[in-house]
Structures are given as structure tokens and as C-alpha cells.
Length: 438
Image (cartoon, rainbow, N blue to C red):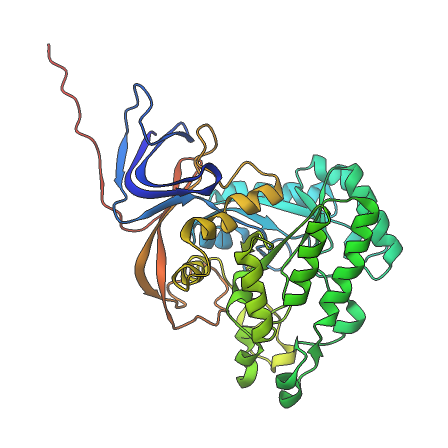
């Protein structure tokens, strides 16, 4: 049906729009922003006064746990959480069970996402078969099946020659390579940032060098092969500086950071709280500030939720034995709004890092309100406060350090292809029916 979203502050960084105006939707697509198309009649008018209207958010990393770990979550549960968080496009990394290294697994995920109908799910194919870092995956067939890029997820490719050949192969397929920079030997069995706090707690640490050494190796191979590459979830200020220098030299690289790494440091782990166990780990305050600076300067172009739901059994262990990850889809918006209130970014810049920028990295037609594109829309109240609780989270994973805390900013409505997939309380009315006079 035709929808008219009126009086909202429309923020569409892809088109340089930031104004109180109207959005018109017809046949599942954006019909216009500003002035109604000729002959447009709305079946429903939504008053978005004092609300913000943006493109649906695009998440570069969300582990949906299906196939293979549906005791933790399912595509149905996590796409419902995405809709509640205003996220309309999710990128699934290849470390499912089985691994996304065949077209059959890609098709399975796409089918289950379509059946759930709450968000678009795109896949990264495996860079190597079973992510073992030994034999290259069939990238051509994965691309034909719909993969938007290739990655070895968090499994390091120890053999440098294999990584070089993988980058060359990906370039011939015109696929972006998504790299998690971590040297397996330096990371070892570490579970948090190596520093004074890990020493005091007696926990094995992961040094900053595990990331910076891997970034240096991979940048040299990118320079050698010319492969288009994206660095996932940077955690250190020095790694961000390395990426910045590479971009200055014209290398085809981009980078993202998880929203959590813009707030938390290894100080949070002083009480052995497993809610702060993530990979890569939270590092020092200097690193957090360096990542924030790189984001503000545009050297890091995208922020992602890095959503990773866990079941209770995975969290009720000694810290080193717990599984890493945060359930973050529904708290992504409040944390981004905190960055705006902290004056790190203005609102359009913050929205760009979660919409058009990740869409460009994934090369998908999303993250914009351009007329003609699918009407994926997020409407949120930047002032509404709510308490993050097990009863308020749609995700099957309740593993978040924000559990029990009050946050500000909540999604009121999410549209996927013009269809309402999430709706809270928004004043709504239908236009009066015209009476035909004889």
C-alpha cells in the first residue's frame, strides 16, 4: 500500500538530506522525498513529528547462529531483533555450521531469511574451504549464489602464500575480501587485551601486536595483488593509523569498528564480567580514543553492531572459558546516539556510518532513500528512554553489558520493502474516504 510518512526529520546522508519533510512510499519503493508525486494517494499517513526518519540500517556483521547453532538463536529470532533495532540489511559471516563455502548453504540462509521476512540477509562466502586456511573456496560459484564478498571470518590464514593466492582469486572474481586482522601465533589462547589488567587478573592476553602485525602483512599483500579489501572490527589505534596510511597511498582498503569498541575498554573486565568478553578484545583507553578519532576523521568509514548472541551456558563459565560476543542489534541505535550527544559525530555523519557507508562496502542497493529503491526505512525517537532487559530484547541472546541499564533512543517503526516489520506506538490515521457524489 501507499504510505505517507510526514513531519519527520528525514536524515538521508546518501543524498545530503537533513530536513523536516515527508517521505512517500508506493509499491514497496521510495516514491519521493519532499513533494508528493503527481496523483499520489496514501492508504496510511504516519505522523513522525519529533521523530527521525532514516534509511534502514545496514549491519556489516551479525551472526544469526543458523545453520548449526540454533540453540543460541535462529534467523527468525535475530531478524526480528534487527527489525526492532531499525536494521533492514544484515551481513552474515561465513563461520556457520556448515561453513558458507558452497552455494547450497547460501541458498539455505537466503530461503530462511525470506521465510522470516523481517530483514534482508546477505552472506560472505568462505575464503578457504571450511575456513581451514589451506585450500581456496570456489569463489566464482559463491558469487553466483549471491555472496557479496569473501572472508575467513576469525580463522587466521597462517600460510601467507595461501592468503596471497586468495586475494588474487578474489580480485579476478571482483569480490571484496573481508579480513579479520589477527596473528594466530601472537593471539594464542588469549581472552582479553594484554596489559596491566590482564596481568593482575591472571588472564592470558592478546597483545596489540597480534592485530598490527597482521594488518602490516595484509597491507603488503594487498599492495602486491590490488585486491579490494575491507578490514573488519579494528580494535587498536595503531591499526587504524596503518589503514589511514595505506589509504593515503591509494590502496583499495576500508575499515569498520564495532560500536562497543567505541565505548568499552579492558577496564570493564576487572570484575571478570563475561558480558565484556569479545573478539577482538576491548583494549586500552588510548585505543578506544584512537578509534573514535579515526571514525571522526572518516578513516574508519563504518560502524557495525558485531551482533553475536550467546546462550546462558556459554556465559556461565570462568571468564576465559566463556564464548565471546555481545547481543547488540537492539542497542546499536542508543549507543550511536550517545556518540552524537558526546559531540563525536553529528547526526548525519553517525547515520552515514550505519547506512550508506556499509551499503557501499557491501555493494548492495541499500542505505538510501533515493526514489526508486526499496523502501527500507527506520523511524526512531531520539529522546525515548527504555531499560534493556530480557523481556525487552527480541534477540534470543541476552548477553549484553547493558542488561538492566537505561538507554536513550528507540526505534518506533521499521519498513522492509514498504512493509511494516516492526511497529511501536506512532500516531497514525487513515485519510478520510472520499464520498462520490452523483
